[in-house]
Image (cartoon, rainbow, N blue to C red; front, top):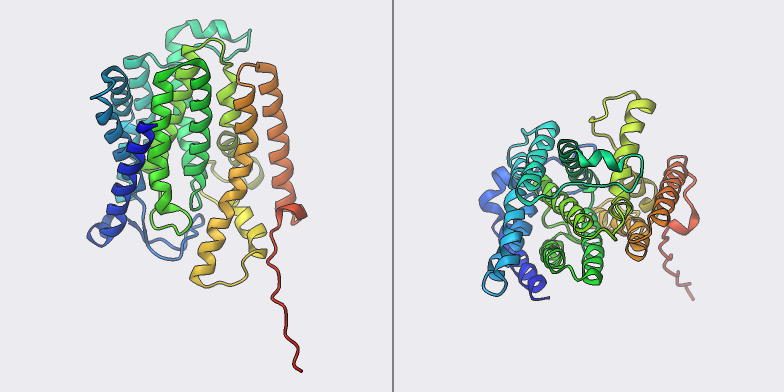
Length: 372
């Protein structure tokens, strides 16, 4: 728990410094675009929150050197491997000139480094017809590189509202920490605690008021660490089903798959073209509009923040059964199918203006006082 406390404190103070001194770096670090299709903030905000998270993780790993040098060394190596993924996202945050393909490429480079240096690669998918193929190391590495980059990109895509991606990632790291504890895996448990603390240190300034954003750097870094830690857990423990991380990550994964299908086959637009039809955007526009009627800055910020808990619950609907049934492949597969069906049903209801009543939070009208 000391690792969590250290990373939280360092990330909290580091993020505070970024927010407090925003006037010194706002020229290159602040998001001034208030009109984009995926923009829901009402004032310019720094979008380099990933720096605070990286500082928290790095600082906690360095402090760990004095007590557990081996664990600290492994953590620092993994953080070093993550540098290309974070770096590409960070450069995009400050220049707005790094394409999605370039960010994916550098995240693949990061995954390749982790595969070569630490041996973190997918060796099985618990599908009997396919598992023998992963004995071929180049194929195993290639599949790992693509999977890691895909998850990192998925975390970046769901990063649309205050606290959304960061809390979703925190729930996933908590799940992995629990499974690692049950298995006695001190390395995965240590890294998971470090990441939980670092993300919460950022979260304190991001939610609910959106004083700083995660940014592409933070999203790709978190996505990379989630993917690598999940693969490490499956590789080190044969009793962990390969479908455990699939179910745990199904919300961001299916968000991407469904978005590609929607853009390519329904709208006829390029799959990488940004739009305003993600599930989280529809909840903001078609569910939360009933909760917050005013259009002033404070009300819009509340509306932004009220959107995220809906998606936290959706994510928890996958993370919780994954955490409970991490050993049982067929249960996990069944839960994946149920989640996909529920997601499609929910999306269809909202897009057709048939939102279930239990999703709509209504403010109670103020009682009127009669004149005597």
